[in-house]
Image (tube, rainbow, N blue to C red):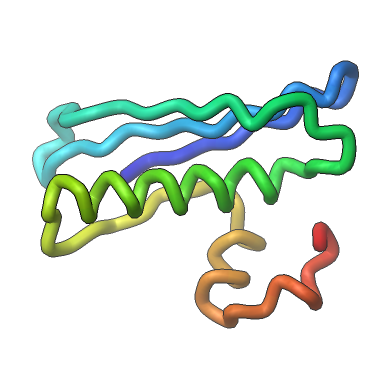
Length: 90
């Protein structure tokens, strides 16, 4: 699963999306989600929505194993540690 989030500073537009592909890199399904005009959102919020949405799809498709690829180390740390309160983006 490859994901990427977006929060545009000039108008607070926020969106999330990604793709699911098989172990050979072949596309299976893509997903997007409009998160709205989110004045207090940061990119981390969008990244976390991406991961949640992608994981829901993997459950719906009954995938047994999933590798999540994100460019947000902070999102990875939050998921691993379960601690959003100490995040700089909280």
